[in-house]
Image (cartoon, rainbow, N blue to C red; front, side, top):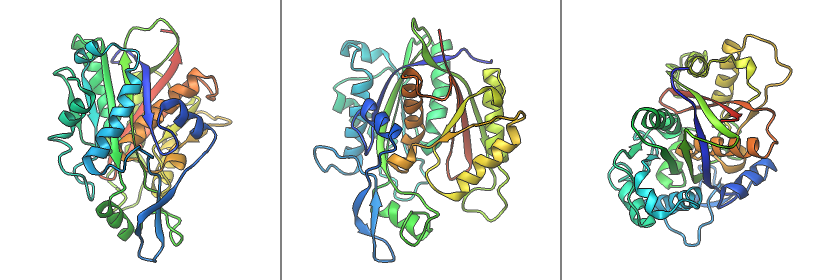
Length: 341
């Protein structure tokens, strides 16, 4: 292992099926879904369905992202005195810059607007990480460095994202990537926010991040070349090497897969490339079936769901592989184990 494991000690999650981690995870465990009609119509004249978060007011744009992120962070830091928040770096994960219809100001002003909403300031090591679905793994790697080498005792990772904008929906609809009555090979758009607090010192059993791996896939979803799954397989191997274990030693998988055949095929190909011992079962969880495609929030939702499943003893085991991918070819994998400190 190249870096000490860090523990997920607190969580927060805001989704279309719950405004808190407990409610969201319970709904996801029960396979509850809550899609509703948007204000937009697809090319076939049908209303586009989506997983929208039910906030108290119909905020839009950056304000909506700020409100969702603030809810998740407040839940995550609920038992931490407000005066101590200033010592905690915040790694804020948002949509990648190439995303169609990306909201303006995510890199420049969202962080300051969030601090104003929370009436606090976070530590100077704070960053905005604009890599979409792979942002959280990048944040985890950076958080471990801050904790183990930067003299920081805790790091907060938060994510907020929404695909429910017409410019975004129309671009994906034209590319035939939305799930509609005439297209089964697509995803249902969603939105949400989440937060996790990381620390290295724990006195009770916790979910530890043991390995993080990165790689690139040249055969991205918008290219014609054949998909071989080499990028995701490489990311998984890198994460396993850091964790010091083999894939067959883990108990299940959880992913940001949201419905498109491309990403299901990639997960299957990567598994075939890495798994070297027979397993009777190796199930894969994908929270997007309940909360939709939530962009930068998707991987963080996977971590929160995993933490709840391990803490409440309904996970298939104590070792889990989480993997995520974005459309521009970035691939990430995270190995976690629920153990004593």
